[in-house]
Length: 406
Ligand code: HEM
Image (cartoon, rainbow, N blue to C red; front, side, top):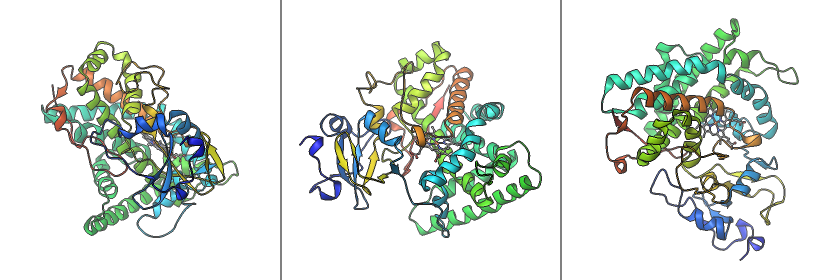
C-alpha cells in the first residue's frame, strides 16, 4: 500500500507494536531502515494501548518537529501531586505558555553559555582530578559525566559548591522514579527537600538580585511587562534538571563508548584535537541520549505528512534516531565519523522545539572531551566494550558505568 493510501491509526487493523526491541544502546531499532524505504509514515500501537503515526524519514521528522500545527500538550500547569511539575515543563505546556517560557527563560539560557565557560571549565578540571585520584581504573560516568552536568545546573541556579553533592543526591533520587512504592516515597521526599532549598535560593535572589540566571528570570519582564512568578521560576529549575542533567551525561557516555568501539576514530581525534567540535556533533547524531521512543506530538488540525492524511487529535511520534541515520541526508549514516560535516542532526530538535540548552550542552561536551584526551593521552576502556551495560532509564539512557584506564 502506498503511503498516500494509508489509513488513520485508529482505523488500521494491525498497527506495528511500538517501541521496537533494541539490543545495543548505540544502535537504533533495526525496523527503522526498512520503514524509511517502505513505509515512512506508519501506524503503531503504544504500550498504553493507544495508537500513533511513527515518522522515520529525516525530512518528515524535521518538518513535523518545526510545525506549530503539532502540539505536545498536557495543556499547561496542573496543580497538585508529585508529578505536578510536569505540567509546568515548557515542552508540555500550551503553545502560548511555551512561547512565554522561551522568550524569558529560554533566551536567558541561550545567552548564558559564554558567561558559563569559566565555571564549566573549572568543573571539568575538578572532575578530571577526581578521576585521576580514583584510578586507574575509574568510572567516567560517576566521576566525570554526572558530576559535570549536575554541577553546571547547580552553577546556573546558584547552588554553592559545598552543597552540590546533596543537590545531586536529591536529583538522582527524584529522577530515578520507578513504580516501586518505596521509590515513590523517597522521590517525593527528595522533591520536597529540593523544593524547600530552591525556594530559599529564590528568596535570597529576590531580596538582592545579581546578574545570575535565577535573578535574570525573576527580574526580566516579558513583552507584556509581566515577570515570571515564583512558581514559574521553580518550575524552570525542574525543567533544567529534567532536560539538562542526564541528557548531557548520557550523550557523552554514548559518544565515548562509540569512540572506544571505533579506535581509528579515537586516533583521528587524538591526532587532530580541532575535531572535538565535529566529534561532539557526531556523538549527538549517532546515539542521542533518549532511549529511542520519542515524545508524542498531536495534530491540532487535519493535515498531511508525506501525503498521508493525519486527523486533528491524532498522535505522531518523530523517530529522531531514525532521522539521524537517514542515508538520504547523511552519507554512510551508520558509520561513526568524528570529522563528519555537515551534520544537521535533529537531536536538539528544531525551530519552535529547538533545545534552549544546546549551547551549554555543546560547551560541556566539548570541554570534557578535549580535556579528557589532553590529560589522559592513553585513555582506554578498562573492560571489553560488550560488557558495558546500559542504564535502565525509560526516557534517557546511556552507559551505566564506563570503567577507563590510562
Ligand atoms: C545533549 C544534551 C541535550 C539534548 C540531546 C537535548 C535535547 C532537547 C530536545 C530534543 C528538546 C526539545 C523537546 C521538544 O521536542 O519539545 C529540548 C528542550 C529543552 N532543553 Fe534540551 N537537550 C540537551 C541538553 C540540555 C541542557 C544542558 C539544558 C539546560 C541546562 C536543556 C534545557 C532544555 C529546555 C529548558 C528545553 C525546553 C525548551 C522549550 O520547551 O522550549 N537541554 N532539549
